[in-house]
Length: 127
Image (cartoon, rainbow, N blue to C red):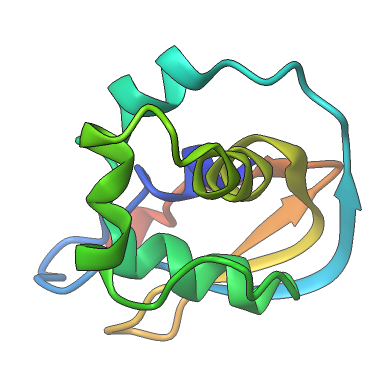
């Protein structure tokens, strides 16, 4: 599972009001090379919750993204800051959570991730 996917997932258990961002418990992380596309990254930047991305990347062992999103707003306006775009590219598209779990921040419910696929199915009493 890529972090671009993680950044759009939340816990949908009935009654949960704070289900985002899901915490990551990583058991196996892999890196897969993906072609660099700066235009795609600039387009996606507005849709990304920066703080959640930084926290998720750090839980996978990647600490190269700036903590403060105000530093990252340069991505939207600066064509020249390719080093920051490449860091964003690596975090969003090349890091993969292969095995582990996503944890609801409110309930602590763990959703397993196997072979890179998160299982977000709810139990009958959670719907």
